[in-house]
Image (cartoon, rainbow, N blue to C red; front, side, top):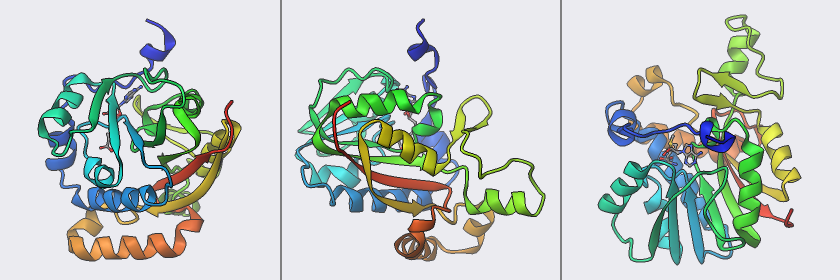
Amino acid sequence: MDKNTEEICNYAGYDYKTDYWIKVDRSYENECEQYTVSKLINKCQNRHKIIDIGCGFGRLFPSYQPYTDSQILCDYAQHLLDQAEKELKNTENTTFIQGNMYELPIDDTSCTIALSIRTLHHLNRPKVFFKQLNRILTPNGHAILEIPNKRNFLTILRFIIGRSSFNPFTKAPHKLGDTFINFHPKQIINDLKENGFKCICTKNTNFLRHPIIKKLLPLKIMIKIDKFLQSTISFMNLSPSIIVLIKKEHSI
Ligand SMILES: C[S@@+](CC[C@H](N)C(=O)[O-])C[C@H]1O[C@@H](n2cnc3c(N)ncnc32)[C@H](O)[C@@H]1O
């Protein structure tokens, strides 16, 4: 097995939809992300062909399909692609491709938009993926990526009051167990720059994804608060999840 295959976080046999999104109700996170992705997709000028990389069971498909001419859904886990193909509606212009983010089986300069949400936290070497993104995107193509933020308000608070010795301000990635890695947003944006991308905007979301808050506040109110905070304090990059819109400036 080569390094690119060895490092994959393999979802084979995992019922990601039921176990992660349904058993524990994550409607709040889902609605916030659908909203943010739709908003950012609509900022992209050329919406001819989008690729959703690490698409899982196609959760975010409804947030981009209505605004794009054709779609590629790509994931390493074949059973999740099969589930997407079976369950999604409006897939006339959609292709399902099994592939690895470290070596995407996609032609050079063939996609106008790339989307990858909740995937960076599985990558030990995000820069290898950013190179792939640069390769498959058309000139001036866009990408929308989610950054799992190690420097969020909760990790900062815990550090300041001495509840955690983990320093959220350092640029090094923060590994949580074998499969999760959180990153400093500035480090990821720098890595993207090195790989030919310019950051167009950042949207902060999932501010309230704490179990206690979920118990206290109705879903509708939580979503309203998230949208308000997203539109007012996104520049601070303090939420646990940051979604960035970037543009390919040059090939590498
Ligand atoms: C947390 S899920 C996110 C799924 C989807 N983007 C969403 O937000 O609902 C991570 C997905 O990334 C896929 N994945 C992880 N490592 C991968 C790799 N190296 N190449 C392709 N897909 C990968 C997994 O199979 C899984 O479907």
